Amino acid sequence: MRRLTSFLSLCALMPALALSAPGTAVAGHDGSPDRDEVPSLVAAVAEANQRMADVGSDIQIKQEGVNRALVEVAAARDTLAQARRDVVASDQALTDSQHAIEAAQQRFDRFAASTYTNGPSGALPLAQSPEEILAGASTQQTLTISFQRVRDDLLRRQTDQANKLSAATAARARAESAAADAQRRQDDAVAALRDAQQTFTAQQREVERLATERDSAQARLEAARPVAATAAAPSAAQPGTGPASGAPWDRGTTSPGGATEGGLWDTTLPMVPSANVAGDPVAIINAVLKIMATSAQLTADMGRKFLTKLGILSPVTAAADPGITNGRIPRLYGRQASEFVIRRAMSQLGVPYSWGGGNANGPSRGIDQGANTVGFDCSGLMLYAFAGVGIKLDHYSGSQYNAGRKIPSSQMRRGDLIFYGPNASQHEAMYLGDGMMIEAPYTGSVVKISPVRTSGMTPYVTRLIEY
Image (tube, helix red, strand yellow):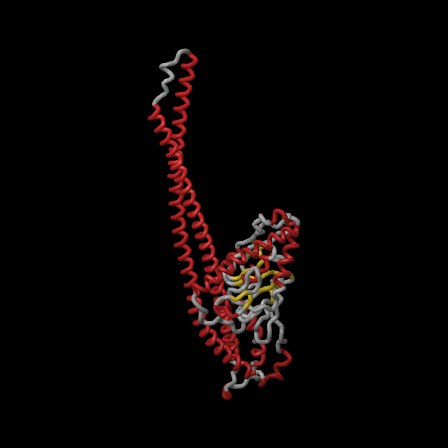
């Protein structure tokens, strides 16, 4: 990103260098730049643009970092909920075991009392024949076996209770550990939100300072143009031209000011989210997690409908199917599924960017400045698009990067996900083919189609649907 942005800026500002040729530049008595100043001013503008591009990248990383913290809170709370269900099940099993022991104890007590009261069988001393002796022995043996069975049943129930008690104790320990982990994750998410608040405040000041420096240098360059417009006209660079790129999908052109249509952070002023986290961070977390839970259920419902439509599920068995289709869509139907996902994403063109916004049901209110905007952020848009075929994704670009098969970026094809930043922590988009992608790029923008930017791209794209 840095090299490309600086290069674009330099190309866009080359007319100023042409205008400063010997004999055409004006001395600095009237405040306009002299010939020696022009190269340094061009470099100053390019440097300011690049530093603002870096701020834009940092903003995206910070926003996706908060998304990751929220995903981790959701996972921790899911683990806690399961641990609590295990505790309830263990407690019930322990209660059932206790009841079984009590019943076995009662049978044992009755049998023991009967044996003590009636004594051993008197049939053997009074037997008149071998047959009577055998019958008496058999009766005594039967009583002995019955007593042993009752005793063994009691011992087995007592052993089972000890195991159930151990399981219940372990379940409570897991629940306590899960509760502690959920609290830690929540604390981390709150810290991430507050850190974002402080960071965005500092970044806003930095953007304002850089913008002032850039505008000052740009104004001095502009002052040189009228002076030598006639002399420089034959060699002036044409608006809209840009450097050739070695990547076949880098087809974006640059504007005269050096900004690319591919993204705001390339060379123009980045939008910084508001410096105040709207509302209590814990309340924000709880609201987002509630939306996540609803989104997961809706994804499963759409997955069942999609599989039924393909004939993979019958209407009779669909209700019992989990509905989540990650890795379940046959290659035979992969292209059809991929095109459905792309159409679903394209249906949201023009919807505003909202940090933290977007779920399986469509655009939603987000976090911070996004709390007042119904829309999508980059990962929310992809979550929505793939939910249409039952593919469940976390609302975090780094998690989505690991949700499918890694493909070298040179081999990406329509429907693959493109990622930016370290460990896909900055941004993501969906490849449409012909060097174009759909994205929800930044605060203040909308869902749109852009030329693919290779600067900052991860070496692999992610393929969620095979065909």
